[in-house]
Amino acid sequence: MSNFISPDDTRYDERSRALIRIGRDAISKENPSALRSYFSEDFKFHGPDGDLGFEQLEIFFSQMRDAFANYYCERYEIVSAGNVIGCRTEMGGVFIRPFDPTPIGTVQPHGKQVTLTLINVFRYDEDGRLAEEWVQYDNLEWLRQLGVELVPASR
Image (cartoon, rainbow, N blue to C red; front, side, top):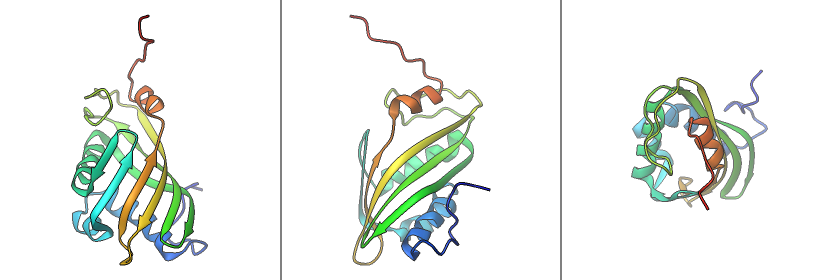
């Protein structure tokens, strides 16, 4: 049995289940119309590597799908209150093609499974569309999984 939350799990509100569905149906798979309708026109993303708009985030999702075979985006825990959702997300796949959007530039594939665990806070606008997202994740662990050998700086 999977630890991921099902979009059919009625213990969660509809907004939370829609978040699960968008991960499965329009982030892990290419579905630009579903993605566009889910996000607000002025969407803002705030992450460890800087801020992005919708178009930049859409490119990032495409780069993930290109670099990682069997790419997925799933949710573990979700807490929903008003127009805000907090959750733990896992993205991953088998690293098969070069991956550009890292803090150190392009990383070459190694053919192994990788997972990126995120802590997200999502804010929805008055129309119920995703307006803003704050994300935290461990960049050092992500780079290690990608096969980057990290060495201490010379003193």
